[in-house]
Image (spheres, one colour):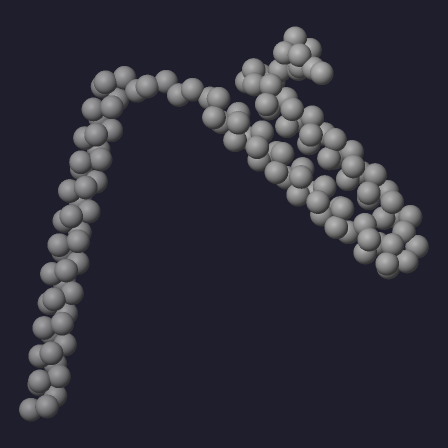
Length: 127
């Protein structure tokens, strides 16, 4: 049974990432062997028998890669912003909010004006 002393650690220092990496490497070796066997397959039935295992190996490799990415990202720390940067970002967010509200009001006003003009055109056409 491996102990924490002989378990290889990844740069993030998480033994879970090392275990998932090992599983990915093993799945890649299985995929290589399955692909070699598929080249030696004589009949379509032989090839069809290998296909589920090939897809399982590919899926396992993909899942392991994604889990490595997720665990590495989870272990990443982000430094908090300094108060000046935070204040600037808040000011920019407020500015965007105000501009969004202005645009919504202008769009509603233009929509209403277009509706009135369309009605006037229809009334004029009836007369």
